Picture 1 (cartoon, rainbow, N blue to C red):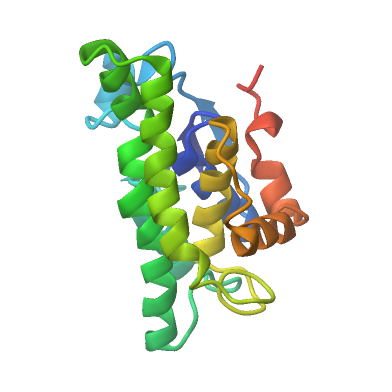
Picture 2: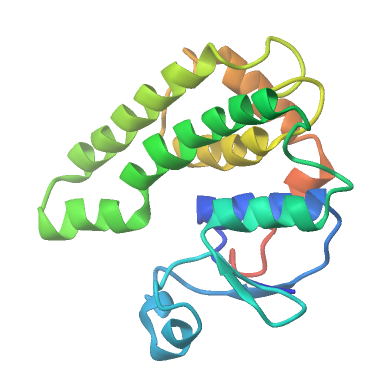
Length: 209
């Protein structure tokens, strides 16, 4: 498999965690978002949306959007599941995932931050305030939903953990005060002790230098 990724993209970070968790080997194909490589003709021919991640399967099919990729990986490689077997429990995990994937990250991704800074000419302080506001809204909603022991949902890693850790990484990059979210901090620390999460960390990626 080939994963088209950028080391600090939280969406790509999620997919790296999922691949590692399932023990799937893949080729790391860096797409430098800061250099706008995602807008180049070569990448657009591969993925017309011009976003990362994109996953090329062993059969040559191309998958885009991190949620769709992770759901496909979970169906195709079910031995180490990221969603519970019970449908109600699956819905509960997906609800946690959607807080991050639908309510937080889309408002704080690089395209939005660049639009704020470049097109709307807001100051760095205003842009960072925007970022921390939406992090706070989402984390406040999520904090009370997490299990008080174990991971986001029970004793096993789930898709919610795969989404949470990259979002916390980004929150810390923007100097978010995490004191109000002790449960999130605890879960994130537990995840980061696991090899799948360690290997997916932005600092461990070939394009991080």
